[in-house]
Length: 281
Image 1: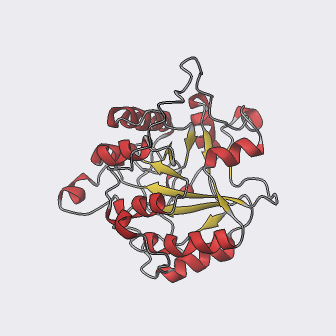
Image 2: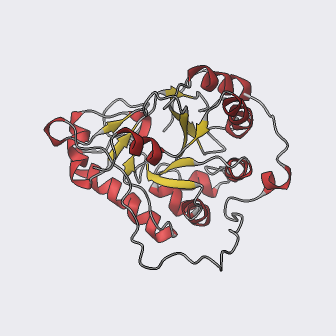
């Protein structure tokens, strides 16, 4: 999802973890004395109940409660027609950003396109298997679900559902075990037709209430300031996980995280905000 707004700076020595590749997460410590119960069934991720007329529900932020939870979300964008640019050396991934989130122990939700997962399967698998993160759907193609959406090519109504399902297929092929039933519209653009088209897929559409302005920004301080000024308890912050389109994001995160923690905020995944809002549907 690419949005142009205003555009934050380094704090915290992160050491060697900053040079770690996203494809090589820190291995968890063995807990041989306390094996996980084999009979425990995985719980279903929380979703919202369908909206009016059974339309796909839309989630924008969590409850404005005193616990001051905030969700950082990162869009891993790559459109279906950008393969040649990637082959020519353009970087649509951002391993340093993922390493920074790990070093700072920040849970996050990554909204990934299927095309991105195909281009960077090792990174997609690493993110998807790290309990610090959760992977959600950002479409396969990153084409628009409405007309006039930041110049993106537009999907027909007949192709919308297939595009979302194709992304989940790409995640499974990359080795992402449990992609979440959450969907972010490319460009954040949607209408009633799009919500109706996705109803059979059973996803909750996830928007945001804080725009970071990191798309195409080079001033990390401006990005961080915009986030810090906008965050409220329950906020969902939209950022990006693409080096070429959001080169200042990792530096902005290194200022955002300690400053929000100093204000008493705790970082959570989108699933935790949704669960605290309406519970499982």
